Image 1: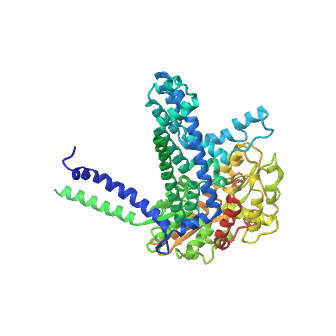
Image 2 (image 1 turned 120 degrees about the vertical axis):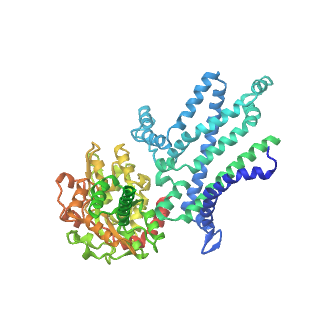
Image 3 (image 1 turned 30 degrees about the vertical axis):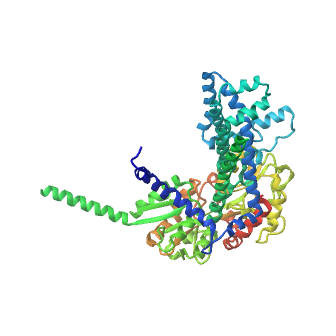
Length: 275
Length: 340
């Protein structure tokens, strides 16, 4: 398209300079703070971060909740996405509209709604008591369960949408063919649907996992200081202790976790391919 | 031609006049809270009085303190308001200077505890608040800070996080109630830790507690009196505890930055804010409880404030030096026992 590479590069230069100045440089400065102590480069602050039991608990909790939310949204996502793509076009459009709708509502409003729904006098507890499953209301708020429910509701649509587009690109005859050849539903899913839609799963999984790690509002409102996650811990370090060094360490850990998750999911997808 | 010259001359004069007015500028740093009311009651009338421009910066205390420290050698902010322990921290860092109280005509009207709460006149108190327990009188009775952990409140009580301004004073009173009020707050933190599964949440914002109370999620919580207005309007039988160990609280002070470029204006502004007229208006708008002892308000207004000599004297405030010197220890003790 261009006479030589230089022209192309020259056209990309303004955007690259802009991105470098407003994004890469500040992020670099912020993150480098975690590797510096008394003027020299070191990993000591990272070691120090993981020495604290609270920090370790928060790290594992964040990883655990992120993984569970991703796994559960994948299971629900496949079922929902498969049932949507098999619908006739008009109904499919409507269903996709319903899936997208929560994304148009602010996460703050959605999270506050959960406070009302999960509270002692909320819908969930009133149903539980009415059904006689428990004599007294169950405490959901400020527990990991509440954070899990909030995050799942927040990010499930992203998984469903990724899987819908993956399933739509799957050859229409693949599933009937496998069934005719005697595969049961489990085999169809594992040997046909999963390999053909793994790209969608990787994209959806990365979005949901990264989203769960970096969500702030939901863990802050539904978990509070009793269920600290890395993101809420980061906020606490900055606003309470003005401790930017710890904050930059947490930011770096979050970035590493997101990139690793993406690489891991991609690796899983290609490994299956080779078999 | 002449007309044009004249017109441009007039325009020039007008411009330089405007420039002079803008030269007279006071920069203050305040809490982000109730800024509409402050603008109406304090800022606009002061601008009219001094014929100067008032620049207001807002933010949470950590941010504002960090900013003051960063600009220590060339301060852009002349005057700021903050908690007593933040003021002491600023004083120790050499950000602030001693206030010449003889230049404040309203100084003698202040309650004694507001006169020099930080030491060396490094801050003058302009408001304070009581911290006690707000509770549902139809469900429980609270006569001591230890009553927060009674059986009826298991799973129905919130407690302030140690990182909030309410946290340490509330812990201090719990310590008193269990008979150990050492400054390290170890016994109190251990007592809270023992009950942590029965505490719904360790709140970080007072608005959060109001919501939990409204939703009947909790029946009691230690709160600052400044938030009480919302509780009395909830339609429940809400009460403000007067525990036998007493009430605690906090105070906010005005500070003057070292090397302030507009010192005279800063003094004029502080004196204006401390005047009986302005303190009365702020009290009537339920913005800040008055530190000026000459302020008189109706019973209805007083109900929502920390008001009157008797109340003021009964407050068991934590010494700012104690807060500052122990804060890190409290935080690590809290994180080790409660944070996880």
